[in-house]
Image (cartoon, rainbow over all chains, first blue to last red; front, side, top):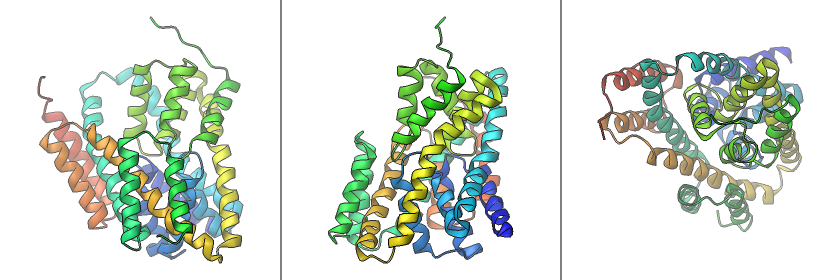
Length: 174
Length: 183
């Protein structure tokens, strides 16, 4: 049990420091570690957990606590959440303090500009990878595309899109 | 000089708790609404700057932002309160959902719901990525880096850490040398 908790903490602690561009950027890497490297679950099980995490309120990091729950119930969930938030939070606490002093330096501007395209590539690449697993047929791809289009062009509340997806699934359209 | 409302520690916790509990899909617009418009803890410029910082640092952006805001007003204890306020309710709700899922995962109806939920959820991420991409600097190096990262992760399935070790220095070097064209 405690070996599993340690393994969870190490996996999510690493992901925490790699998550440039937010938690969604490391979802593919999480999948690779959890499914291929550790063999904790199948890709389909991981995708189901991802869908559940997306339908809970709050930041997208919850996927980590769901994987932790699957492996080691409540302690696993708590350790995984602390793992994925802890290292990056401590870093951002100290960097936010330093930034106040150094923000006008040229290097800081270069960092800000240089990271922007990377985080966009990470988010879209991750979405593409997930889509390959989540979208099992042409109707799922269509649903995914419509949801993407509406989320991009309008400010409709995401819950409507998730609800529409759930209903479409329940009716057997997907 | 603009005047600030300085939140107490309790207000930090309850403010972020309120965001966590209603923030479905993505909480960023809600955070902006609360911090700048409703409570006046930050100005728009300060918000943009702290958010930019949260985005370039690793970790969940909104969590980083909550830590930076809490820390700015009340140091480490403020950061901890904002952080736990933000995550407490979503954590409990996610635990509830996943235990329901484990109990009823055999039900065909639940499988069907998830089969529809997953593509819609993935679409939301595409939508957010496209929104960000539309605001990206229109220079060839920026677009090339974004496309290269997309291909490496999405199509070639490369592991993230070695990729970042190459891309981050490259991106910062390019941004340093290629000045923005004066407009």
